[in-house]
Length: 371
Image (cartoon, rainbow, N blue to C red; front, side, top):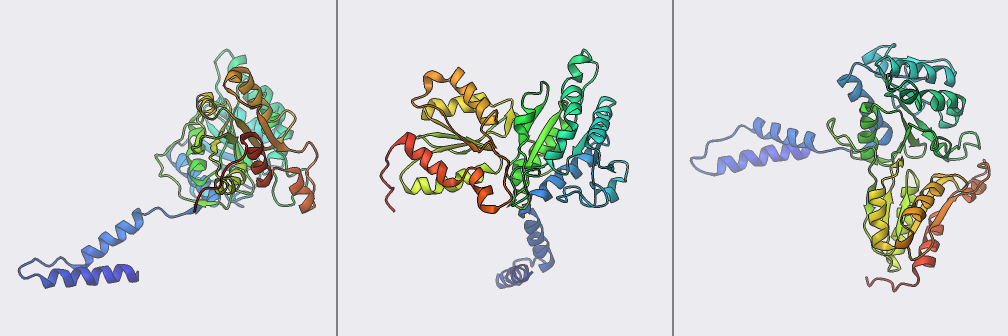
């Protein structure tokens, strides 16, 4: 306000100082300053960006609805639907009983009959109770009905290793769901892509499992406007480089970038790719990166056995084997239940120091860049 006031005063002084110049009222200058301030993007948290996406899509399309435990009057376990029941009513923002198989099945039925439901799992680990509905129903109905039905359904919620949440609340279910035919897997990682990807998922005619990491809800950043919609099948080149390709997704993007800051000081030039689409993989972006660097490291929070990294490593070895100068390195979580104790919890998942060590091992020595 002070800056705006000073701008108005200065504008008035400049106009009055020139003989014969018509004086522009200070109020007009003030309005322009206010409009410019509104035009500037403010930073918001990821949960706010997700809420914006849901709100804008519900406003745009009356067939979009939300269902899940505490999504209505409580606003969702991480406030992604905060206050929406007041705007759209209890039937479009529906509080359900604690029965994941029941309300997920209801979401599948609603999608079959023309609605676009968003099913929120209070924790992704709880969706194991709805595995039958996700696998045998929403993933296969378009095929088993001979194309008579489609299931434009988004299943979303918090997952991943948090801060001492215990084994049952630290699940990484992407490895469980990746083998289901007909289902797409998407993992957001930033405020901007969270909003744009969720909007795209809601508009898609395919069933989408949308992974949000429990530790990223309070990450801040700028979100796009209501017309910005991202491609669900496209990876993001976070950083271009030439030494090695590091493939990652979700919270591990930040772990990798922490390692990159250290690697750059040591003279390394890694390329970082955020997969975003966990099924299908964006093989165009992946292939282009590997052909440039000829080395690949996969960093994930998923378990090593049967995880996303295992699938990606297999695809790279099958289709890009002759482009590699080194075996594919996988940095994954240990195949053990996630401990509650902080030190043990940290020991089960990938740390930035492991990424640094892996790059140094496969790339070799580098001379630190001159400061």
